[in-house]
Each structure stands twice: as structure tokens, then as C-alpha cells.
Image 1 (cartoon, rainbow, N blue to C red):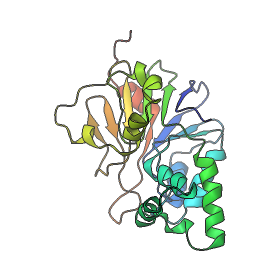
Image 2: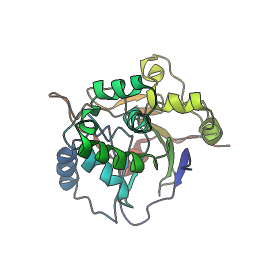
Image 3: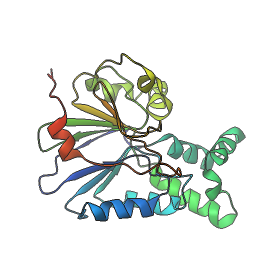
Length: 235
């Protein structure tokens, strides 16, 4: 069984980057990585999930999971893919199709591609704690953090409703007076489209609509964020 939470140790030799929701826009990712002179195996790339659907290259996006330098959390689109392939109630397949999943439903070859993609997506955790070489810690989950204290994240993810919150919720980004999540320097999320990366307390939302005509793929250097993040007191 894939753990719901993953701890990732510091990268002592290169840089760490994170992208917003990819949604099959692999060409945009390749261009962004080239512009930053990304070195696979030395640098690492993190993802807030939603690798698949809406864009033209869902299969290629999922194949990124095979790389040791790539670390992603599960998004709601991976969740829809997994549930549809598993044959859950028909409304799940309908929901997935309506939200960009038709690529996995166009005949036998497409169905096989979806099953292969699901096998890779099943390995993704719901949350990552990234221990940065600066000593800072980043918490990554797709939609929002489901707990007030990051120290509770592993226990919380045993609860199906709180796992669902990491995939689907939007309450925190819509709240004017959001409180910081304790015992983590910065949490990073996608899911809700914003025009530019948006900070709310110590949460950063970076889904800038790579698949939209007026959107783009956010690629941020975590080394820069580590310098900018206000330190927190830990118990």
C-alpha cells in the first residue's frame, strides 16, 4: 500500500523546483525547465498534482513519475482517473470525462493507456514533507492542508475525509483571515486557478492555468522560497 505521506530528504547537490498543476502540458514544462537549466539527477522537481487531463499529453505527464528526481502528490484528477479505472460507480467515469478524462476512454488503446497511468498514479502520496537543505520544511498537498498543525499530517491522512480535503477543498484560499499552519514553514498547493501565485498566511497557491489560453505553468525555485519564507517555531 502506498503511504499517504512521504518525507523527502534535503537535496545537498542541486536545486529544488516545484510546478503548479501540469494538466498534460508537457511541452510547457520542458521549455520552463530548459530556461532554468534544470539538470536531471542533480536538480529535483516537485509537483502539486493534477498531472493529467485537459492538456494534450497526459500519458507523457504521468511518465514523469518514473524519474527519481520527480516527486508529485496526488491531485483530484489522479483520483478521478484511479476511481474510473477501478470501475467505481458510473458517475465517476462521467465526472472524469467531463473534466478532461476523455483521453483515457477513446477505445481499447486509450483504455490500456489509462490503466497504465493509473498504476503509476497509485504510487503518489497525498502529502509530502520536503526537508530543504536550508533547514526549512515545505508541506506539499494538492488542494489545501487538512490540519492546523503539520505535525498531525500523517495521522490525519488515515481519515478518508481529510484525504479528500487534500484533493478537493477550496475553503482556505477563499478565506480572508486564514491562520498559518503550525510547525511548517510553507505549504504549497494547486487546484484553484489564480492569475499569479497567491500567498495566504503560510500557504502558497501556484495553479496558474497552464492549459488555459491566458494561463501559464508556474515553475518556482524552492531555494528562493526558502530564503523568503518567514521562519516558524517548532515543537
